[in-house]
Length: 412
Image (cartoon, rainbow, N blue to C red; front, side):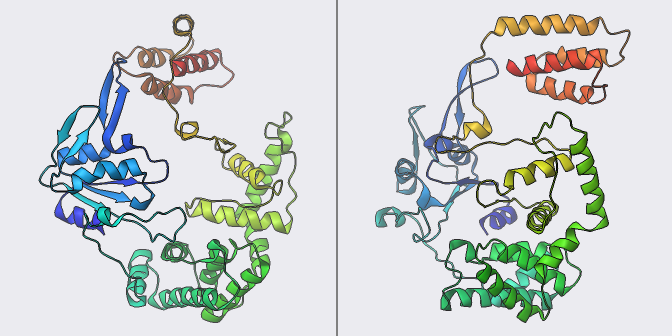
């Protein structure tokens, strides 16, 4: 809603998603090295919004750390200013600056109760659940499905919510159905109400561990959509389609031809369980939905991801997460370059060797031109050189030299 209001009012809207590890630097800013290695102050999202008159949304405010809430106190009271310790200065907000905060109820996991004094600094507005009539209009307009199908989706959601309240089933958190689930369901392609009901089963029932709970979801969908659902037959049929059969053959041929067994997979047993997992994950991939695979150790979760990566010819990375895994493991971090002189010597040597191949390969001039661009960072050089490498034979001497060049550049 805030994004919509900002857009029609002509203002830029920025957002901070708070969590237990959100740092004050994300709000205020911190010192970072520039392209020349000099430390300069990089303003945070809040400071930038204050200076430029942006609208800012502080999402999940009751997950924010106490030091963040304290820093907001002065901005929210009569002073209406923000103190930046690193700059030893007070910043007055631009006249167009607006601040909004959102939070879920405190009974949600990890949320804390904000103090009355802090909450009184805001104008508090409580949102009710979306009415059935409004929800039907939202799904109809956003997902472009027939109003009669919208009614069936909403009726199924209400029945599942009622079943959760009156029955011992659906007690786990995964059992709750939300508006977000409903929109995902409605967005999935379907040609009939039977197909739409089956998509609902894949989304809502297959995330439940208990067979009895899945059966309850199936009965509710069959009642509302007036059809019979046979999940096992659906998974067999889905993985026996001509398009998928061709992909299976291609995948099995690729695995059998890999003597080095790079991925540690030599053959696939297409039993019903594996077909079910494959069907569910492929549907998520086709609909560009993120996937969380849950199951016991050794049941094939990682193997399935590896197989699909081979099938789609996409790089596959696996990160083993643990209690000490940090965001830098995913995003990267600033680290000193070691052996810079040796790396520079390697780049100079490889550059000369590439130059000697100019008569043999027409791509040499383009590689050298990309390497010698003045005032260009290494990331841009690597991107340009990689695009040239893609057109070279992988067994050629130029390809191998260029690969060494890219590796060396990435270390600087």
